[in-house]
Structure formats: structure tokens, C-alpha cells
Length: 467
Image (cartoon, rainbow, N blue to C red; front, side, top):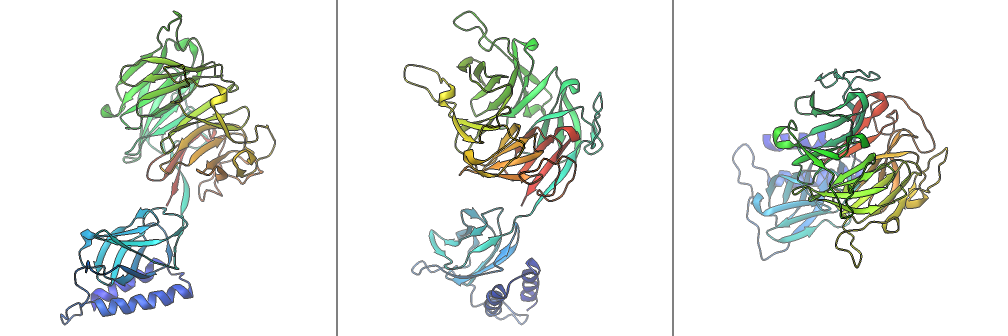
């Protein structure tokens, strides 16, 4: 019975705060385990038998009933069989990691963020059974930590080295690739691209540039793009740094001559930059020009102009709904549009103000903020945006020193920083609702649930971990 007691101890350690109802379920599962375990004298496990394809799958219990990422659970039922390769367990639509299976029980680890409440489904060789009347409660654990930079310290030149000993001049824009490299545009006199290796916990200078600003990676995570901000750098539009070379080699993309014999982008300061799997999109500071540039052949196309964004705007491409999201600093609005929209009579996309959907913010500059759905929400000075693998969009708000989250249903809530209605700046790590920022300017998200924030006037980069 040693195996049984080891498993029982692990189960009990998963959630010491189980409710009385959960303990009833656990008691039933213990009985299942006792019946199914081999003992020290070598008794055969009567539940070590194959799945019967002529019978259905029955799921009748789970214990514990709540927990977070990696919580060990036991799912009881009938006709699971004994072949782990044929069994899958789902919490809503998220597949759990299988540990062991026997005909009356499945042992698994809870997947990451399946939803606040999950319906449990067991699938065996194409057949499925669902646990009725009981859902698993997922407990989210979130923290804000500083991952690079020295708080309240700006140096010129910036200093490389161990991540928390390094310094920035002014960390303004951030992007993150698929292996955890965080790239930061160190603005103004910083004049360089910084590379934070989360694996090595070290910051290096990837490249010296003139005026680095908005930056992004393409969908394949093969290239990092960073614009040259000021019009004095034209005809240069942006630089491309290759992931293959650890972002140490560059290729420059230049403006081109249009049909009217003028430069297509022209002599404008630039602000917004985004990329999908084919194009890099670049908008001038006040919306005078909006172009897309092919990542392979470098062709520059004008796809919009005279878009009244106000002085500054920022973009992110949402890979889930395939839409572009545009934040407007001056009015606290979020706009959304299809970058591939082509009206009748044109051969290239053409984006006007009328083609943009106003989805978030009242559009009124106010001394306070409030959460809400869509245009009922009141936001402040909106800067950089990031989008995650579930289609959520995160926005930095310099005025209210916080990070907003917009879900796919357009519910707009404070994700990290002081609560709505306040404008408290400062510096504090910890729980997202207790963390403090000082005019955060840009944000980016990874596919495994990490959010990186350029906390510009604390002179650090922060990480929001959600598990």
C-alpha cells in the first residue's frame, strides 16, 4: 500500500483549504484508489484492464474541486481503460497533462487558465464522458515583479550586465519573442536596442540606433522590427533584426517613390508600428500617412492617409480576430479595424477614419477613470498595446499609472495598478491590484501568459505573471 499512501499524501497537499463538500468527493475517490491499488503482497489490480469499446465513458467525480496550475487531481469513473495514449482529459477546452490511468480513475495535472469554472471531459479512443453537475474552480495566481533595470535610475550611457543591475536611459517600447527574449527600445539618448535574456537573466545591447521607438515581431517570431522615429531619418522607415543572429544583424527598410513621384510615407515623424505574417504596418505620428511594407520584397504601399488620430497613436495586431487595434493618446479611445479591407474599385487596402470601429473609451478627457463595457469605460492617456493568445488586449495608461485589459467581449477592467478612479503613481511589486507603476508606456504578451511592461519613469521593465 506504499504507492497508495504516497498518492494520497500528494492529493491532500494539493489543497489544504478544501470545502466539506470537496472532502466528501475525496473520500469517495480514496475508496476508488484503495479498490484499485496493488498492495505490498502483490495482489493484482482489478482495474488494470483495457477500455471496452462497446460501452460508454462514465465520469462521476473529481477531487479536489479547486486549485491552480499544476494541481494534481483524480477523476473517477468507468471504462477509462489502462492505455494512457488513448485517454485525454479536458478542463473546458484546455487539455490536462496525464499522469496515470486505470479503468476507474484518471490522474492528471490542471492546465493553465482553463477558465474560472471548468467542465471536465474525459475522452477515450474517440468516445467521451462529461462530469455532470460539478465544475472545477480555477484559482488564478498573479504577481508583478521587476525583471530588468535599476529602479529610479537613468544613466547615459545605459549599463549592460545582470538584469537587475543593468540600467536604462528611458525604456519606452517592448516586444517579446517565443523563447523569452525581451527586446526594449531605449529611447532618446539611450539610442539602442536592449536584449533581456530571461533564460540567462542578463541584459545586453543588441544594436545602437538613432531614435528607436515602436517595435514588434512578426507572427513567425523570425524578425524584430523597430522604427526610426523622427522624419530626419527618412527615407529610412525601420530596421529588421534577425532572431537567427540573436538580433545582432540588421536589414534596413526604406521608403519608396510612388506614382506621383513623391515618397510614399514622406517626411513625417512616425509613432505606430505593428506586424502580421506578411506585412509591417507603420503610421505617422498624427495619422497623415499609413503604409504597409512587405516583409520579403520590401514593397511599400499607401493604405490610408489623413486619419485624425491626434498627436500620438499606437498599434497592435490581434492574432485571434485578425484585426488591428489602435490606441489614441489624446482622447483615450481604442479603435479597431481590418488592415486587409479593400473597398470596391481599389486593388490595395484603403483605410479611412470611417473604416475604424470605435470600441473602447468615452472619448472625453477626464480627471477620473472607470471600468465598463466598450464605450462606457473611461480611460486616460492610452499608450502601447499588447495582445495575448486568447484575444485579450492590454493597454498602458500613463495618466492613471495602470494597465487595462479588454477581453473579446469588450469588457474593460484594470488589470494591474491602482483601482479605477485613482491616479496613484509609485513603485511596488506584488499582487497586480497592489502594484504601482510610474507612467508605463508599452506592453507585450507571450503565448504562455506572461506580460512585460515598460515602466518608463521607474526606469525598469516589469513582468506580470498569470498562472
